[in-house]
Length: 104
Image (cartoon, rainbow, N blue to C red):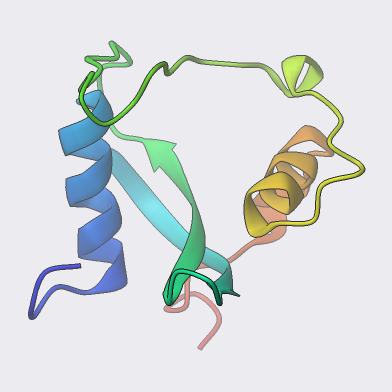
């Protein structure tokens, strides 16, 4: 995050920087502290806003792609926000996550 930036602004910026995609309808899911590195993983769901062409920032990511729910692997043994989010998406429950503005 940059100073003065909201989480949602950070998601928009990071997704654009790392894969060249615009996103909208950004929805907070959950966070998880990483004690050994004094960092936190913050999970969001979002929708594509426009062109779906991925432009990979290769110094940040090794790969990126589009996957259907059926193509998501089962990570039953992994316990992390990322693994949990993949399970939620695979099961089609991501649409149950609301914007903070929607739930007020």
